[in-house]
Length: 279
Ligand code: AMP
Ligand code: ZN
Ligand code: FE
Ligand code: FE
Image (cartoon, rainbow, N blue to C red; front, side, top):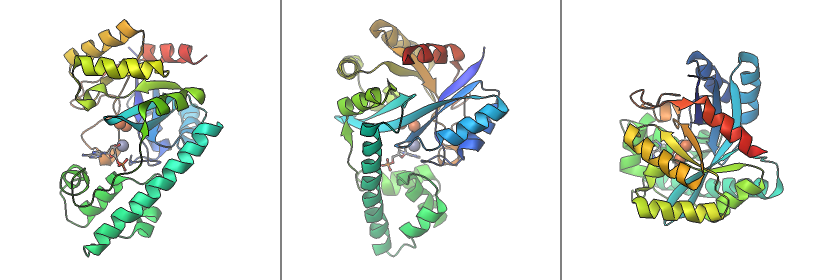
């Protein structure tokens, strides 16, 4: 079976691999295709596609947008045209909002006497800066053992250095992706800790606004959980997608293509169906 990974982050957001290196990693692992799905940015896609053309890995353009319905919900958008006017202004605005939040977080840390400078961070990290980068800085300062540890102690909601950012609603996110010609997909549904009725409520609400698919295969999801999600997707006529949520060294336990404990496997057939849905 030819394998793919439809959820990969690069250093255009909070992954540690450049877009080109992410594609070369996919090639090394024998993956037929990957989607680049950075947070709030599609900037890595062009470089990834150029590398993919050279080395024979199919690269799908994607994006991941944080939205909310009660809790934070992530929506993936495949094949979007990021230059289309509405999403273009949204991405600009969300990046400005992040920038303001980031400056506040850096200030809080500096006020505590930590050697953190936002300007230095901007030079060090190439793309969208978020909490994972602050977590990495705290690791580098010897204040945490790992990015995950830094999240738990310093930057998760409720922690000393947490500052929220503006998050749009699920209906807005789904509609915006659709209006940019993209295919909106609900990311990692188990992350929202919803029971069956609550998950269905989310799906039905999002579908009314244009949701087309659901990420049924994901790092750490058991076979049983995957089967449950795939049955729901079939029931609602949603496309099934799957990906690892690879972040390189920011989430070192996740391997591209195979996820955690190598138990992830996404067939190329999922991408074929996704492509048919675009036109
Ligand atoms: P932000 O959008 O800047 O508030 O950062 C949120 C992002 O941090 C999420 O989209 C995740 O990719 C990442 N994240 C959340 N928890 C962790 C964690 N424990 N370790 C590494 N990355 C995390
Ligand atoms: Zn991330
Ligand atoms: Fe996500
Ligand atoms: Fe992700």
